[in-house]
Length: 204
Image (cartoon, rainbow, N blue to C red; front, side):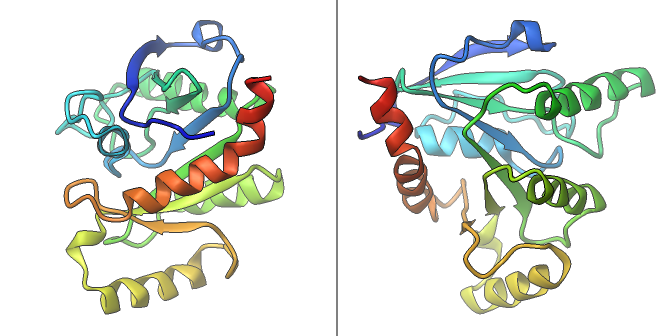
């Protein structure tokens, strides 16, 4: 079943799990540190620069932001970790929200875990990947801002990352640039293929 990513609209926000939408369709969670480009990726996949707010201040998003993708699935943009200029109690609140999201039993189909290809993975990136591996959570690794590197530089960087991050040769890895529209078609196609069985069942 084809997904029209351009038919993506803002659904709403949730400050706790009670505010999340009903689980009536597949859900894709976007995770990563605050300035990694999650909002930019949502905009790029939807081909709509005005869909998700792109903040110049890392950590500004402190709730789960939901997008309705073609009335077939949700994107759930989690608060980013690290660099948030917020009071300690506020920071703890949205970090707790992220933790609850993964341990609550809420059903989601896939995690897009974003890492800025220009910088070494953070300790939180490593912890997140370890957690997903240990709990058999399906994920795609999405390396953002790849237009800043040549292909040779990018390959060298990915080789270095493979020494730090526990992902295998057959892991689903994508190098994308929201700004230059690089890698987006491959990522859209992979999401569509991954969700195909689930989408077909929900359409029956």
